[in-house]
Image 1 (cartoon, rainbow, N blue to C red):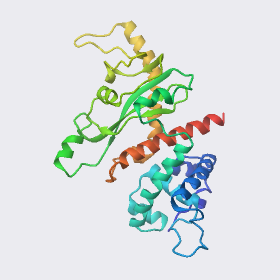
Image 2: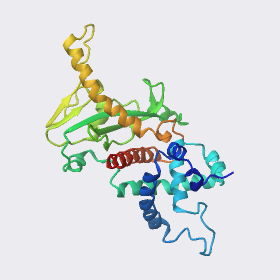
Image 3: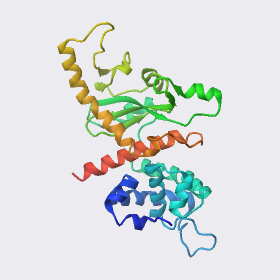
Image 4: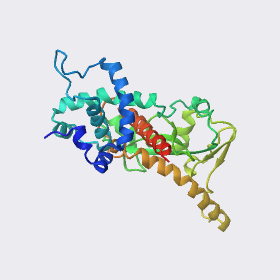
Length: 299
């Protein structure tokens, strides 16, 4: 049994469900992926007429399909090997060879969000929109075997071991503008945002929630729901205002949902390679931005 890109392409809905991209999006990405692939492996590296052992996946499209399939479905490497007709060890090699190439492809397309908080202001300098949303998203990871790491990553709120990222998104285009570094999930949202040292354009309207209480960057208009006082209650006017704010803030939940269309950042994260948890989150945000760009252009 072996699945190929061409077989999957026979059914549009199946293709979308296993890659998160439609045909047009995949084709656009594959053009850039080919360039980045050849930077790593050389021109005509998949040419079967060349001497030596041919690469496992015979076309650029097969390599991109394999990578997207893994990120979207997050199957066990043994399962990936079975599906694609290769060994588990070869599946592991391909995952770690091709994932950085996918990232560089998305970066070339301008879809990777800013990672340096001090540079966000410059990143957004040409944009007219002034409304941004900030939130934090947690991902569960496997329980570390090391006792100290268990304590470090254990989140009492989530009752499991987690990592967290700060996300800043655009209200109008729903793109991820900024992705914070991957930190332990128990870290408070405000503290994580403070440590990222995010600089916003002057006059930005920043929509956040009560998890960022006290987070007030300079030259920014912070829009936050009123927190219910201890032992008290909110007035009808405050409740009405909170509902209005929530109706706007729901957009950031939609953005995070779009990012987590990839099961590799939705399911319990199993990979042990250092930094890989951060890399796949960056790719998930990049693919979300890529889909946003493509689908806005089609309107």
